Image (cartoon, rainbow, N blue to C red; front, side, top):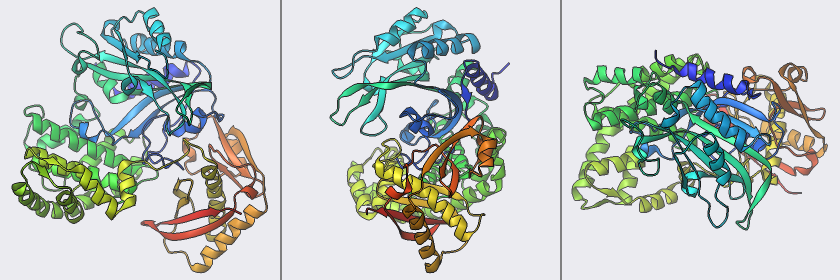
Length: 589
């Protein structure tokens, strides 16, 4: 009998619930008030304030299944084990248990609950360097559990963090499962193709200082992440994640419409994997609670890149139209029970993806002809200028240009392309890298002030425009606040002045900002705003701006509004259909 994804989710959460962990819901794919990344990339991402020492309302032991998007290794997608979208099974200790319990429970879950043969497991630990000693403690624990296939590796493999230039970081211990033929051979170091990583236990025991030194942390944390897709494949004896229930219906759909067979040809299989992976990621991005639409900036640009790369690979299979909506429907069918917003937005997802497909198909033919001209005149390399023309004129993402060039045995001058890109659009360059300069991971004073200001702004918007106004997203750096909210029209000059004046009035009143903690009913009784209340379980925290507002939030915030300075709106614009955006700054007194 096949081991199902739903069984794996339940087994994992029940196991850690039995170890006194509070079970958290999956956070949105769109990070809240954190410009350090464009998407939620790991289960720890929404927990950064608590890993830095803030008290979590659900306690010190936490676990969940978190949906994630990672584009850093998009070039790897197309093999049997890499994905843009994936589910991460994770458990955390916030200053509670540490290495012994974490590794022992990891071993117990794998061998006792999942019943993976002990002999098929191997682990890696941090080998140490001039800054931090070798992680012999983890190695000893593994040896005591009977694991003998253990190797030490360097920072590239077995070190995490910090998230910014400074902050919590530490060694990690990765667990691998053998997927080769016959008896296990070698180790993940000597035979990497025959061992697949399924779980990673990160031990945040150091703090990196501004001078580059590492000091022991007062609050030592555990952060683990297990890839659901990879583990599910291992449990069913598959070496290819795309043959599991989470992908196979999409693969079968492509086989049917293309007339090609998955597994027969290497390039056909690669294209099918890229298409179904990218369509799954695109479906989740559009269908998220804070859904994003295709655009040329930020998350919208990542979404557009994914869709267009999938369309190009569909063309290689002979598919020229109407496949995006079909695949998105299959994704919704697979995941709707666990992620209800997908069903709620099924029609929107299909409409958005179909429209983007139709739009790009028109550009694709002309762009491919232009590329053929460029390639015929290029000896070894496609110039950065030519690559940039393909991007600006025909909408070809860089990954797609590189793939086209590789098929002609050409390289792309990426360095000069990026220089062109930077000159053309600094903001898009930042979005492509996927990072800004700061965020909650750094928890700067300026960021905290603007985070508190966003609470005041939301309440003032509701006062001014009506209680139907809700927050649709925000992005905060130390320099500015960007706040999205639902409204079908542009704000008038008079309304903007009224909003700005009212925010400054609350600031000048020097109101106390207090943190409260309780269950959801208590938060509701306090009339605390919460955008996605159905997700909250157990205890929650909310912040009160005394006598003015209550809002469910994890923080951090200032203690009194008087320290915020003077609020100034610098721009009001459309963000997407039915959503307006305010950009604002705080000027020092």
